[in-house]
Image 1 (cartoon, helix red, strand yellow):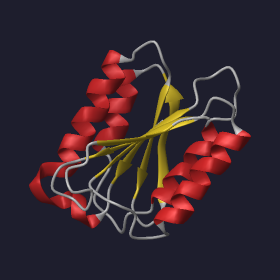
Image 2 (image 1 turned 120 degrees about the horizontal axis):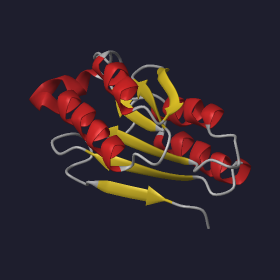
Image 3 (image 1 turned 30 degrees about the vertical axis):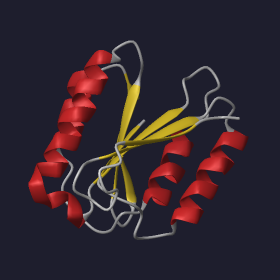
Image 4 (image 1 turned 90 degrees about the vertical axis):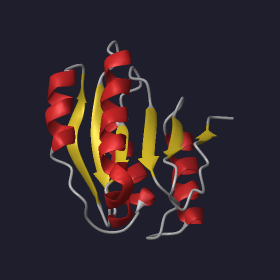
Length: 145
């Protein structure tokens, strides 16, 4: 699952456009996998369940609009609902410009740990766009122990 931050801070410097473009570039390079799309602001919305169809992903990505805060916890929780099949690769790529400002970082990390415990093989990566609260940190990985 790709989860794109749609919070208000993503409006500046074409950050949302860059996040959408990056998601599509990734999907095209990972075409052997089914990829779904979530956006998160104050809440999380599933735009597309995992699919191999990059054209559908492109259409779904285009529909994402700026709204709300940065609720990474909601994104991880929503993604977990779609990653239950043990035959699937269980991964979430969060694309954001900063730290959560709705829900806490501790709660977000706790949710990721709970997903790791419940879903063997679960992995997540946060890709931080430059210019946000992430202070240019471009990636943070959390993998199963």
